[in-house]
Image (cartoon, rainbow over all chains, first blue to last red; front, side, top):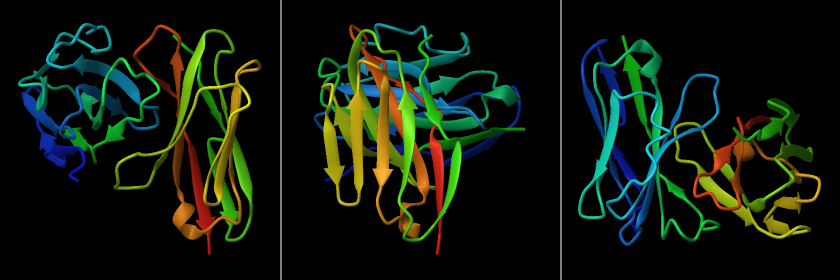
Length: 116
Length: 112
């Protein structure tokens, strides 16, 4: 079956512009996660959804970052007024349910964001 | 902030060598540990999920062990092949949390 897909695969933008990253999870997966990996760093957790609800936004690095999920499916991560330090690979993952915490997460291929 | 450490940071081996690397995590309040393989330009791929002290998991030439009392997991690759070249990530899940904490990974390069 189809895996997790993300778009765009690569994005180059100018400092100060807004960007929107999209994630399509595996059908039937109710949990969705966003991570980013900056150069030389580990995977940094950003936010998770169970259904359309995101109960914990504390991982978002600043108020320029927001995320939403509609219909329990597609999610978008929006970065407003991008800064050079936002350059990273943004990964999305999904799993059957947030409450099955030992469940495997299935990752998308990522969006490579470069802010000039 | 949870401390999840992986060592070594990078590793170069010759084809046919066996190798192993370590993931260290807090020894209290353990729930689960995941291992993932992340090949360049691909998605991270799940290898193992480990939940019980003493767990041993195996998938082909790759195996993993878990010691929750001392807070470490080993990943072993027997007879490394060039296609094993990837970054290997571990992710620790604490009891009561929904958020995995990832280590920085071990980058493995297998030379033909």
